[in-house]
Image (tube, helix red, strand yellow):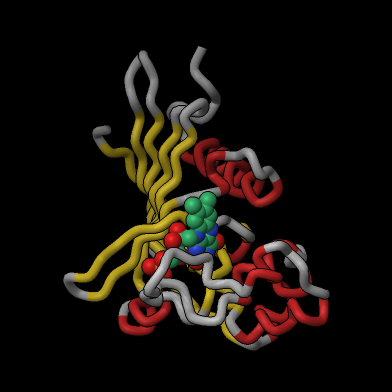
Length: 199
Ligand SMILES: Cc1cc2nc3c(=O)[nH]c(=O)nc-3n(C[C@H](O)[C@H](O)[C@H](O)COP(=O)(O)O)c2cc1C
């Protein structure tokens, strides 16, 4: 039997948002770690990020980053980006075209930072930003930080590097793999247009 979302636009959208919403809570969900791809002219790359929020009412999802990371400079020049998700068990691929908003030291970062776990704050405590070249292999952290030996107060140092990237979804492309025939659909959220595509 085919699932309810096999050939039904609204059921597909329900399924997509349930996968996204669930991924924010479920550490084991494959949708929790999408590829985020962005670029400026001929310098384009993708990287895994952790999905931190999904907000269907505003067609928005978000992840965290370090303000010093290379992708920030790229996004400042070109805030159009893409996100890619695949759940092997569900046989569902979701591709998003998004427009990014970089949040740094504002109400949005303040709220997200207050919810970060102590161990996650470690990422933002590196002396030099992600991608900095070094003479020897390193985590970039002082040894005591590597051992999680820091107080909550010391972890606050990381806030100045903490960044929330909000991704406003412009369009969604869905691919569902099925033995009886794959199905592919596109949702243009800007023009409110749903379209079937040949898979
Ligand atoms: C499982 C996993 C989760 C990651 N989560 C994030 C994340 O939420 N935000 C982030 O900026 N980088 C994250 N990274 C690291 C990025 O993939 C990337 O290596 C890093 O951001 C530096 O690359 P960039 O500055 O070119 O983006 C994660 C990597 C892995 C393997």
